[in-house]
Image 1 (tube, rainbow, N blue to C red):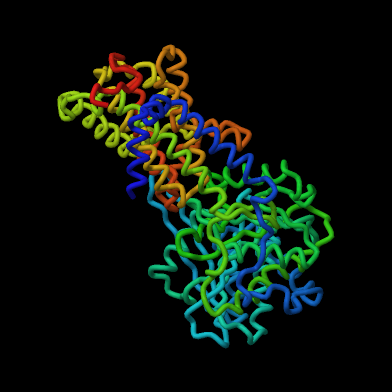
Image 2: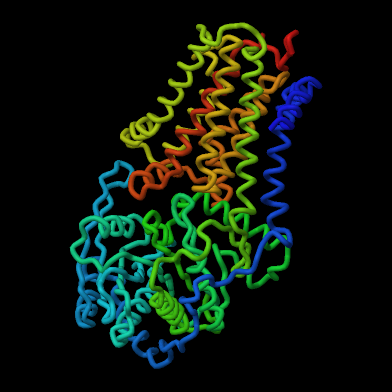
Length: 590
């Protein structure tokens, strides 16, 4: 301890600390570069990742011979022909016909009615068919779930997925080995109605089968007898990920059946996994899907986020491949049999990871420092702003009229950000289309940037304190978010950084306004989301609020209560006086 104190005293006497404080803006930029380089430069490099493996020995994927083979071909084809003919009927008729089949199989069945009252859901109503197959060797406390929506995320009729799900359920009734109940769910779509069913299952649903351990959503939206490859989707709402063992089991089973596997829509099997570029693309797509989870069309597995249910979506892609529809059915069969072996919940493997290919992953310890460094970059700017006030180097009182004004503006910014959702609801109630709503919100951001000087012009000390509170508020928000939703945390940190450039000394007004405009949360998210979707997504803000109201996707409240608060403070502070020094000065005593 004495040695540490001696080193600190030596550093103070030599002036090193004050030299570091003077270069905090440069240090902040350097930290941003290091953070981005760590994710897109270091993590994809050899030595940073590992091959995937099954941590839970009890899973034993592919240790037993899969039975759902050509003997079931005619059964699957028969169900497919019947289900294909049901496409012309409404949901009520389809559900009642399939329910009769499930009743004949011996399942306990019921219909769940969904109803969304949010002003952004347009009064969506739907009906979910579900049935429970009671395992002969279980006590009814645990269950495995298979879901097949009538229409997939692309609004295509999921004739193959429903056919395989029904045929598998009939197939499972002949097996006495189940130590967990099996639940079959057939919603209209894999979005809001499936989420409503999951919420009701954990509250007041009439028929239940115990705690759901795993969920697989089957997506085979074509009449073709064969498919090209299997795509595995696994990123849930709010950055939630299934246990890596669940993902690895599905991939291992599929590859053992000779099926080519991709993840997140990336056809990595066509490229060698030892290529740096291929791994980099997987990281970029993974972070994008993590940040925009819930905002993009829901695949189905997202509906189970928040209940410790290991959920994935299995999607058959392409026509005329080497794998037939019974091969697709053997994948959920084998995964179900593997999970059936578990005596406890998934816990052995990772819950925080990034997949660089179906067979390569990076654990949280390798990539979380990037978010921490990004948070420190904003904290450094907060310290720099505090030093500009001179409060730490002078005898001025901390509590004065300018300090109070800064705290009042912080409270006002926080209040405005929280109430922004009601403001958008007011726009929606004026019967504007979603496209008109999106354009109006973006125009409002531009208007505020160029007219904010009419709202309030802070004094020099108030300006510096507002910037300090803005950057510290954002830094703390990133720190809280980095482990919960790394993709959203990293994306917010990078996209919001032009705020820092806007407060730099000697920045022209035009550049300052441009930095503020592109760092606005709604403008930045709109541009990035539209870029990833290859179209102008004017309905994005409607989606953000609708998903928060209906499926509890955190993107809207997180952005509003963190990024928007800091941005408003920075915009108003940029209109203030510049009498404060841009560099901290030492007092004579120092």
